[in-house]
Each structure stands twice: as C-alpha cells, then as structure tokens.
Image (tube, rainbow, N blue to C red; front, top):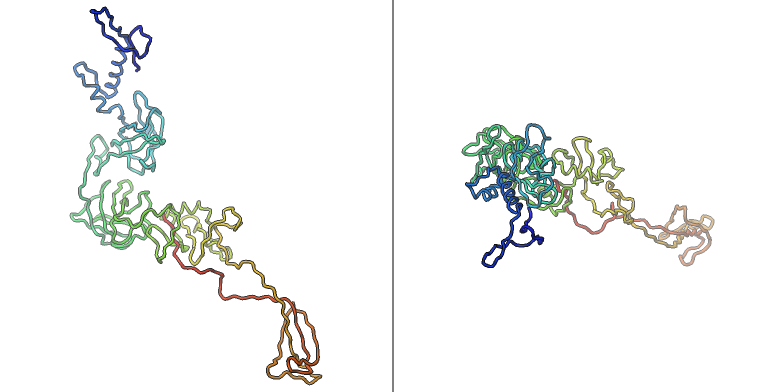
Length: 470
C-alpha cells in the first residue's frame, strides 16, 4: 500500500489540510482508496493471525503482530513429501521473498533421519545449524515446533525448542520438557572401552535426551560401550554417529553423554576438560618430542586401521593422492611405505610409516626434485664430487740374474690393476742403497672410495610424527 494524496492534487506527497469557513478555506477531499486500502491492510494482518475482525476490539492489529501467527505453519505430512523434507505453505506465499533475519516457526510432522530441507511454498532450501553443519537424526521431532531464520547464506538456520524429556506417544501438541539443574555424575568402574556407571538412585530406563556425566577409569582406545546400572550395555558414539576412536578421551576425564533413542546409543557430546584442541584438519601432521601420540592423533608407524573406526581419516587417505595397494606397500623394492595403503580393499587401510625418515617438502612442479611421487620414499645419495691425482708406485722385484734378494725394509710389493701403465728398468738404485735390482714403475689415475656409515646424513635430533584423526 502506498500513500494517497488528497483527491485532485497531483503532488504525490501533498499533505491533507483542514477546512476553515472563517477564512473560506476548503478542506482536502479524501479519495476512496485512502480509506479503503489501510483498512484492507489491517484486516489482512488480523486475519493472517487467524483472528476474526471485530469492531468491538480496537487492539486486534496489536494482538496480531504480537502473536506472529502469520509466521507459523504446520508441516505437510502423510508421505506427500520426500523424507527429510519439511514442507509448509503460507498465505500469501513466501516463496523466495525471504529477507535476512526473517523468522519462521514450524510444527514438524515427522522425525528427520539426517540432513534436511525446508520447503516453503514448493521452493526448497537447506535447513542447517547456524555454523552451516547439517542436521543429524532426530533433531527434528514429530509434533514439535522448531524455529528457522533466513541467514542470507542460502539456507535456513535451525533452532530446536526441545528441552529434555520424551515426547508423548504418537506426538501431539503437548511437549513434556524436563529442565535438569543437576546432571547425574558417577565415576566409571568398568574396563577399557567398556564403561560401567552405577548411579544412585539408579537410572532404570533410557529415553531420548537422557544426559549423564562419567569420569573415565581408563583411556578410550576404540569403539566403546556403557552399562548404566542394571540396563543392558549400549554403544557410545561420536556426534557423527561413528564409533569412538583411540584418543577421544583419556583416564580421569569427564565425558558428557546424551542418549539418542533412534540410535539406541549414548552420543559423546563433550569432554571436561578437553585433552587437546585446535589440532588442525584431519590428516594434518603433528610432531612431538615425546614417544606417545597426542589425544586425537595417531603415530605414523604403518599401522593397519579399520575404516569404519576412522571414517574421516580414511576419506582423507583415499583422496590424498598418497595411497597405494597393500601389495605395493609391502614390496620393499617399491619403497612405498611413505604412502597410505588400501589394506584389504574393503574394511581396512594402512597408515604411512615415517619412522626414522627425514622430511622433504614436495617438489610440486618446481623442478628441484622433478618426477618425485608422493607415494615413494627416496633413497639416500651422495652429491656429485671429483678427486684427481697422479700416482707412481715403484716395486722392487728380486733379480735372480744379479743375485739380488730384497732385504729387511724392502718387502716385495704386488699390485693388480687394469688402469695403470707399467715400465721396467734394471740396474743399481743408489737412492735406495741397492744394486742389481729390477724396478717396476706403475703410473696412472687414482680414485678414492670411503664409507664410514650406512647412510649420508646431517647432524640431527629425533621427534615422533603423528597424524590428526578426524
């Protein structure tokens, strides 16, 4: 709706004036649209809030705006739309007319099982967390209202209004929220990767949202379970639904666990305190002066791993351009132990083995180390050098004709060579104090070879190479 100036006036911003008979001034004529259009706008807002306009209530516009009912919708259910798509319709349609900060409140008709879309008047956009990460299973609940705010980055920001507690059977409008001031805490009494939590008073059932804290008695070294009081053990999983991995938590630290009914498992939500933070992206290399890996990392020692237990690291390895088949990795002549291997080809993979190796930055097309592949370890070598010399060797040989036999201090010397030239001369050699000797002189180029160790290396110190596990 726009402003409607007095009837008969061309200026679109002209004001209205009152008539004044005392000075013979005629008042402005009010055009019909100036009366009709504002009323229709107000009625539209009132009826958009699902209210019935009534002359007896002059605060209906205020109540309509306060309710924000026009930004609320119930999702279309009954299998009409695809799974993990929340579809709603507004009157008048929103479509693609959303603006940054526009809020919507939507009552879901089904639980999600993974990343979701929000379809507004047949136009779908991603529904994600504020940081852009995708939703995980059961964040959208059947019969539960959630918020969505358009953030101008191409997706709707998801805001769950769920508190603790379980939904009534079959959904419905009633939500039972439990607000815990105290989270049950206990010290673990189990063994490695098999936690036992005996709470007092005991926990007798697990429902979605059940939250507990457990102080670990042992390091987490792989997939783990937890047994709560007399209940059957259930898995402890990461936020992405994958099993725990070595280094996720260590002895003496407190794990915050929230039960997921859909996964029948406790989700590992947090660690108090965290053993390490900001390790870097999965696949980053960290050097430590110690002999053990940091929590969240693995030694680069050629170990064989299970893909399902290290899904992010396997994804990194498989796309790193540094992976070979296991048979290639195991063949010494290939020198491929600096690469990942594909393990058995279906369930396992192998880490590179960096032990006792020097690090060199990849040439990457520069030409200083041309032709080098990421997968191959480079053998040690000595750079080019040259030594040139002339050598003459005099060899005294017994001369039976003259009766000369070398005495003490003049041993017979024997040389076998293919590169020296030989000359012979007989007679006395006053310089050596001998007579009647036959002298053989050998002359030619000399080469020098030497080796004092098994490798060529510079002065160095040692560190332990670790890789960040996702």
